[in-house]
Length: 615
Picture (cartoon, helix red, strand yellow):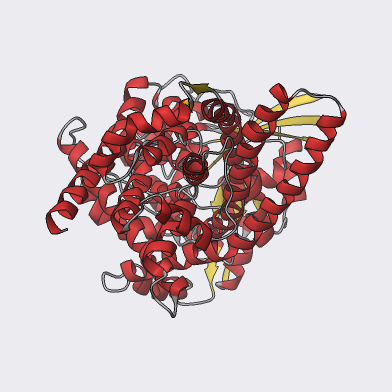
């Protein structure tokens, strides 16, 4: 069997990842969310007698600039590693794609051009003469609508039949037309000619709907309110929709617990092994799954729907001015949005930021926005201590208060980003091209598959790997006694003076420390310590939990301080490992650990001081 390497190139937002996924199926590791394709995903597929290796290059508008994306794409194209360059272009706005197409053609003659999104072009009354375009460029041109599979078979056949061509001047850092300013002008003129000869617009303004909608969602008057309203709606759907699946999972794991214990008893497993296994590892793992899986299963598909629809670049546009004031990068708003689902994913998403300085700022501050692992604690405290006093609309009040808490996290992200950019990470904010892609109707099947495989499984898998040994440690601390009390009790008593300074107690401090592997287990650890139980505690209702907390001295101030610590504390174990991987530095991982922790401590000290003055 023959082997061929295909490099997939194109502008951002042309459906390049959709073409990649359509060709490779599940034989790849990639995802169409910010940061993933920057590293160059790879996949394989077989057609007839040939095995194809597909390399997904970073989306780029040009090969002449010096950003990480353009440099990576240019170096790979000039390297002769690929037998064929498959260029994906957007059929709805072909003119701005021609610059990159002509630059690549100046480097290599072995190119296949894929005009994608033809279904969207037809809706906009845009007609493209593919045969004439092929003649003028002297390369095969395939029309596609990758999301529906249109043109996919023809593309496979063309890639199979295409022989290896020649790469021109590949030893030069930038080749052919790319390097010459006069040639660049020739490119623009020839692009105009190509568009006039090969593209027919049936409407005077084919993008009129997009422009009208953008005047609303990106306006100074309505842009931010619409963004906040959508954010609140996503959180409300996530919160309301996750309750019942979480309860069902809890009941299922409780039923499974009984049967597993019976099975282990029948097998003669000694209590010395059974108790840490079931009360430690099993209960911790199942609690993380019950609390973490349902919100992720709702949030990530909603996030991906907004991405597919084309709204997320508008979020970056609306936030760009505020982030520029902080000397940070406009794309940081996208990584913040990802952080709401999982801070580890948000940190990985920072790869889309070209500037190393601004990328580092985004990584260090991503934990200031709460992930879905912290939502259960925040929601429970808000509902019990603040929204419960409203007889009508308690659910709506809870959602509004949660949104205010999240806005505090966003404000602190901007504040700390500005502080970093003026101190240890000084620099001038870089400029970047932000394309507002056409609005599109999302493909729900693709959204579900991508959300489950690329996000939910990834995040949940990492959390479980870290939560299992943590469950064993928690069980050991709660069940091994010293001087008549468990080690956990001694630890909480040791932390009591420090907790008093923050307006909480030693149990709450220890719960956050032991919750380092997974934020979801903070409340169960608090219950376990208060009830002097040897394993993580579950609660039947918020009313029962509220009574337990009140019996152990909780007040409004305790609740507020705990919320601040929940919002501002060190990243979880999964996120810390991701930060280390992305930065390659334990020093910056330590900074990312300390920044939110010190912020939370300072805010709690201030709140406690004010509380004592007014009480």
